[in-house]
Amino acid sequence: MTQFPPVEEQMRILMRGVDFGDDLTRINMEKELRARLEKASAAGRPLRVYCGFDPTSSDLHLGHTVPLRKLRQFQELGHEVVFLIGTFTGTIGDPSDKESARQQQTLDAAMEKARTFTEQAFRILDRQKTLVEFNHKWLGELSFGDVIDLASNFTVQQFLTRDNFSKRHAKGDPIWLHEFFYALMQGYDAVALNTDVQIGGTDQLFNLMAGRKLMEARGADPQVVLTFPILVGTDGTLRMSKSTGNSIGINEASGVIFTKVLSLPDHTFRNFAELVTRWSQTKIDGLLAQMESGQLNPQEAKALLAWEIVSIFHGDEAADQAAEDARRMFAGDIPSDAPEATISATTGLLDLMNAEGITRSNSEARRLVQQGGVRLNGDVVEDVGIEVTHTPGRDQVLQVGKRRYLRIVSA
Image 1 (cartoon, rainbow, N blue to C red):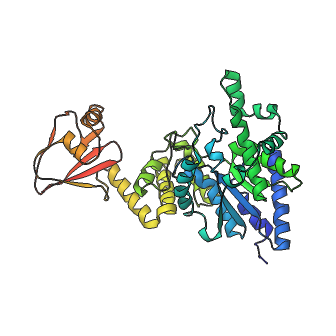
Image 2 (image 1 turned 45 degrees about the horizontal axis):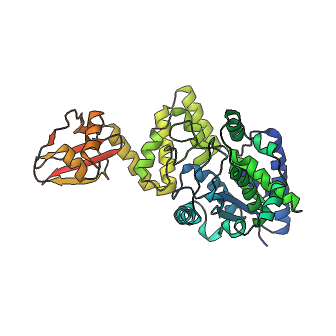
Image 3 (image 1 turned 180 degrees about the vertical axis):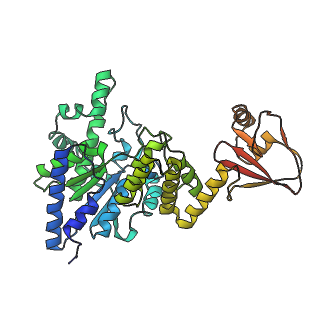
């Protein structure tokens, strides 16, 4: 018989960060969660909690870690967690955050991507306490009659009230029928898994509620749903997404993560601090107050944030090194882990950039120089024909863009 912490202690942990965008929904879901926890504690039976992840990319980014961290909290409180991979839903693509249809992919492609990001998920989840499931196992077995039965629980009007669909409908853009099916399939996941709680982003609320409706239609207690705000990307506006090019991958090098966080717009600090750090709300509120009063410079605050995020995925030592490297970069020095190239004679700059894999062609290297994106020993390179002088005993530094460095050593 499993022993759980007091219900109110669990509620305090599990409700942190929850946001439905609607007070009534929050009140109802909070009430239902408390009742489930009380029942679980009395019976000594853990709640069954899940979150689904479609394998649209091989790598996880910080946005994925928001629900993953909540799943880990459930694990630490003694509950059962299912990491659901949308190997079937991922072939269609979730339209929840899109104003255009997603490109579809094959089941084989989805499975291949899933192998990589599942391993990355265990950097947050407890591998020994996580049940991994694939939704093609049950969705792929549904008959056409089963799909009709699922669809009979919803109206077209319900779908057209969704913000992304209503915008496309108003503009006359196509809304494909298979996009409607996505919510039905995600809802059926809850039925197949017989879950107590489902985690998701605020943009997923319609899909999560579809699960409640289908569970009720089959005589089961509807799952509790907990939704969380969307993490913005490095642009500070759009949802973090690899396809948008504004993501911070959890598998990226510590120095890359650190500098990306440092480069975030100042207004994103709260969003990142509350969703992806281990900080208490008291600490976050204190830092925000210091920023508001001018006691804490936003760049210094982001440096603290960068250290925390790197520490989560790479450890304290890597975070310390990334912070030192960032200091060197902004001071004009070179990071300690910058690659090194050895030259034995005076060499053309463009040839060197190509040989070391910094660029793939002379035209690309020439364009970077012409755009002012290349520095040699701290000076902007303006001549595409410049040569790197062979100077024994003196290292030189090539910088391309903000983050790429090359230490040049003369043999």
